[in-house]
Image 1 (cartoon, rainbow, N blue to C red):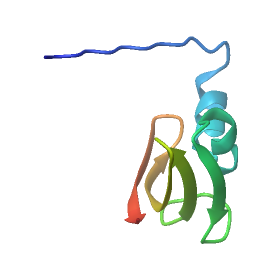
Image 2: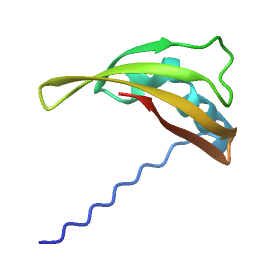
Image 3: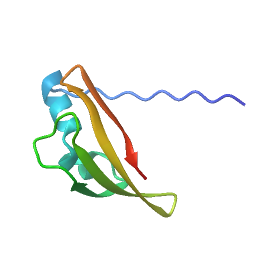
Length: 85
C-alpha cells in the first residue's frame, strides 16, 4: 500500500523572518510539540559546527539526540545532521 501525504501552511511573514525563527533551536519547543527540551552544547551564536541536544517524546518514548549544524545560509539553506543519539 502506498501512502502519499502533503501538508502546506502559508505563513504571512517574510521568508527571512520564518527562516530565522525556524532555525533558532530555542524556538523548537514552540513549533515542534514533541521536543520537550533544548540544550546548547556549543556557545552561541548558531553557526556551522554548533551542536544542540534535544529531548523529545514520541510514541510514548523519550528520545535524546544531538544535532550538529553542517551548513547555514539563511534563508536559503539550513542543514543539520545527527551528531549523537
